Length: 401
Ligand SMILES: Cc1cc2nc3c(=O)[nH]c(=O)nc-3n(C[C@H](O)[C@H](O)[C@H](O)COP(=O)(O)O)c2cc1C
Image (cartoon, rainbow, N blue to C red; front, side, top):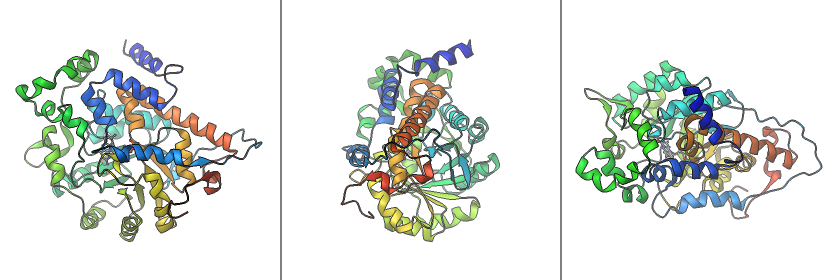
């Protein structure tokens, strides 16, 4: 029965129903309550950066070499010394159990099966040990300091024991961004657990009975199983906004984080060459040029545009990754042409998870893989390491050109 249901779910995201990430987005919109869909889909304030991240890919055009046969395209690469089947990593996405039962485990399993890295957010509903066990591939742990230093140290120790190979420290979340869709949808009220507050917004949940049944069967509103507050236990969902405000990660924190974690440290949330240099001077092993998918400070430049200035500043000293706006394999190719070692995707797989659980995540990865192979063949380029500036035209005013 379970197997049948899984098969059915996998079929629901196959061709011709689902050909691209936008199709997965629409499928997620159909299955999820508005408050959950908008949590994935939305950005901060006017959502200018959210749109700009996408537009930046449109501003870069490809320069193919035609009449070149590339019967086999090699997508393999290494990031921090670990082999990946393609230059793709699943970004930390919090609260995946709102999207699908045991969402983080499902996403990690799909990533591992595809031979790529999964990054688990601190703000997750599944225990980090269970997530590591679910994946047959590499896993990274993304760190917020919610709950304080002792709480973070305990999570770091657990992550080390469970086999997470890198710590991703996100530095762009001094407070949660102003996501107006969440406020209008009553996210705070729905998470409060107080019936009177929830009532005006609860229709969105009732309108999606299949989602609701699965959510309740998965235990209902999750707690943060990897944020164990000393003397209290896992952090409650309703406490997260206040906790984020009290837990800004500073450069000083990097010093003790480095001491507590003797494997690679990745800094996520680099917006400028100045911060890139500072992070590298502090000895980090990799950077992610990221604006949190346009969910934190609005009006910052799109990440693809920032990538050349960061590459010019530190590209020869550290591995540079990027995320933000990737929806097509050709987007991955463009980022690699501008110097990224690999890219992270957030929404592209979260839509898949919301649409069909692990089968949807696997489909998102498959779409991006097939797209990337096709793009390389159309460019006349036989392998990922061969992608360089000669394959793209970049707007003249982007720095670092
Ligand atoms: C629903 C959602 C939740 C997220 N949660 C986190 C998080 O907990 N920690 C973090 O560092 N980044 C988080 N991010 C940001 C992603 O890691 C990533 O930077 C971003 O999604 C990249 O942009 P993209 O969605 O256009 O691919 C989240 C993104 C989304 C869409």
